[in-house]
Length: 207
Image (cartoon, rainbow, N blue to C red; front, side, top):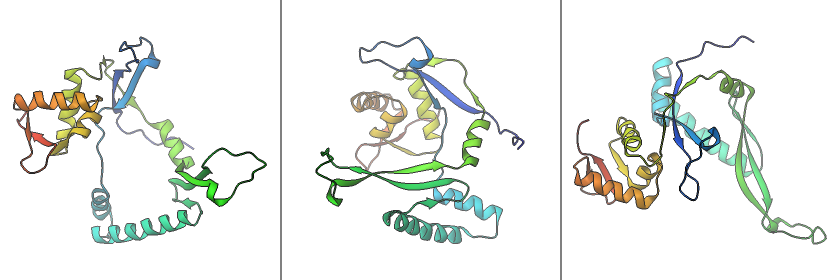
């Protein structure tokens, strides 16, 4: 089967992985690559796109999806697999709660649900091989200020508020470092404390 025309390359960012002693490795195994400006699309966002491309209203799409959610949960709770069309399959993975001797045998009390596994379809697997990526070659420190500021700019392009935990996630730093950096940015007027929600901040300037 011929490959479909590739979309524009996905922009990525490279950062050093810090070792436990604080040093940085020099080879590619010491480099963490992430998508630079990944944005979350909500169910409502996708419902609006479907509405634009078909006669189904946003309410229609959301109603069907809500019903599908309940059916998927019910199917998994019955121990069955869920085939999601050309996307893949969801299945319940189980295991033992504790180690036991084979002579002791296993009862239902020893078994727990460990995870929900998603197995991508052939279509999704092929898609992964068709994607193109680009990176400017720069390898930054995950704790560098320019890297953090770039990540924040990308985040605030689609969000109004940011929490300390989200700040730590996108800047790839610890919560204590996130608190310290937020305090600095608030002092500089680049972040403003939310008037009503504790631990929530918004952009304090127009970059």
